[in-house]
Amino acid sequence: MRSSIWATLCLLLFSSMVWAHSTSKDSFHIGILLYDGAQTIDYAGPYEVFGQANYRLTTVSEDGGTITSAMGLKVTPDTSFDQDNQFDAVIIPGGSINEAMESLEVLQWIKEQSKQAQYVLSVCNGAFILANTGLLDSKKATTIRGAFDSFEKNFSDVELVKNKKFVDNGKFITTAGLSSGIDGALYLVSKVDTIEKAKSVAAKIEYLWVPEGAISGG
Image (cartoon, rainbow, N blue to C red):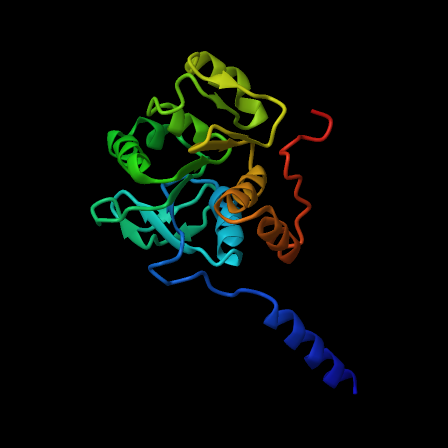
């Protein structure tokens, strides 16, 4: 009897979850930048959100080779900069950013993708990479709290917002640190589709999402 109840519960749970992102060419297509030192939660959190939203997902690095995340996790991207991909949205994770932030290839790829992408989303100190392209000049942005001073010093043309988990400039969206990437990804779902769909995804992943992006006590 107990085994039967457990099997029924598992069936109900599994039937309500999305286990793979869309592969349809008609689906909203998101490119996730990967590089050595990328923070795992910065790309994995949004990846889960967008997969649950049934968007098409492609991970991409400069040469398409395996990258090693900040926590030592090795990931093999789906494609490289050389491939002719044009994404509806681009995600830029943070982490150990120094090499990526100074890479002319990375910066040029972001600038080229942003010409046709509807949205560009940075996570955590990935805002430094995005800001170094010049695309955030005269716009508002946020990043991880511990990097506020450095960001203001290096990017004086960008207005830093310190009390939000995500900041929306229309095309360009930046988020605060680490798990804030999940908040920003859910917000992007609400822009691409509806607030109701974003709330549904948040419920599926059991995440307490504040659509306004406010930081508790901020």
